[in-house]
Image (spheres, rainbow, N blue to C red):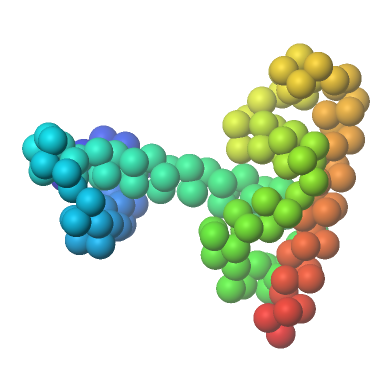
Length: 148
């Protein structure tokens, strides 16, 4: 299973984390294994999905770090925020903001591509992204106040 995780993850540390998470999931959900295929195949599928999620999580964190840096959010605000917390905050963005933010920041699409996909003007895409960044910054500051 380590070889499977290594094929997907960027480095050994991430692969080891994915492997550990895989086996925790296997042990937690072994009762859901329905014996219609091999146990190895079932575990391998969990390892692949866990590794892919690890990649997405790392990419999301890198993208958010970039966005938050651009909006002048300080490191002290980010202390204590986990990926799950950031995902929860992203889910609070209004639909238009969230869609454009995900397409541009997470999926790395250009404003032209987003405009074509959503059938909006490029300027609207840029505006939605700017508003999403400001909205996200306010949400993060509010979350930090709750923790203080």
